[in-house]
Length: 175
Image 1 (cartoon, rainbow, N blue to C red):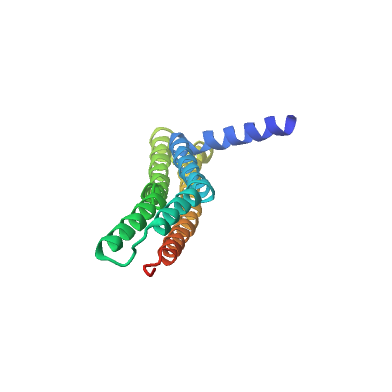
Image 2: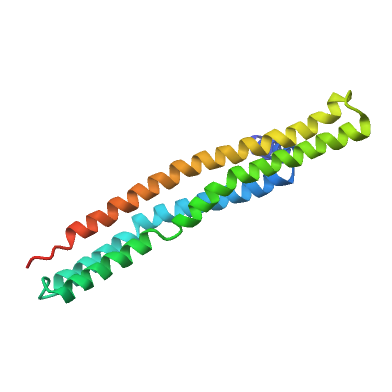
């Protein structure tokens, strides 16, 4: 129990050292990973069900070679692909915003350093340390969030492309 309290206090101290921008970065990264996990759960549950329904509908067709049948097949594949790609653009946007928020934190912290220098002079190193901390911690957090998000979004995009190709291969036009 004490370890949990210590961990919470360490996270709280870290968040305070990073300033208010770090809270925004934390929210962005949390939302990013919530969307990534939602997509992973969709692959395991909703996507499989949807693919089975589409394949059953296609196999139930008596005719699969005409222009009309080809258009129905393309519409089915397009719908599944759209559902697969749901939230991918939002994930990529959050990945792009994360380092920008880190840069905002850098500017915020440097403004604090310059305020301390203007008020107390440039010789008070301890007073400037808090500002430097607020300048570097958000930058690091933004970069870590962006890097982890890039790997996750690349993995998801590859998986989405693979699943769309598999569906296209399974919906044969011959009868």
